[in-house]
Length: 115
Image (cartoon, rainbow, N blue to C red; front, side, top):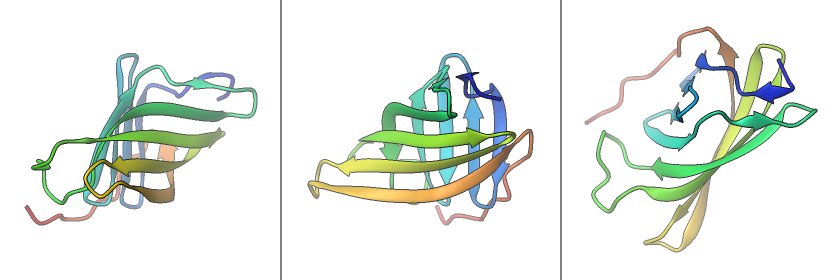
């Protein structure tokens, strides 16, 4: 798929779901999730980075707000491999998630998260 941008639509895998559009890219890994910039450009090798926010907590709402985060990854054909680095402003530390792979056009194979 490179060059261009991260293909719009759903990318799914084992406990990972990515929904990319021109305006936002929503990412779920396990029971945490984030929102990143949309229309994510790819370099000639299919690599990308995007800034956004991340919610590390289990459940839909984090009580101390979303954290600044960076999504990075690489597209290879119809597969994307991603990693997230979230900066916890309370603990003053970076939490790394991934790498995790997803396939374009496939639904996520999720897990049930406690609320």
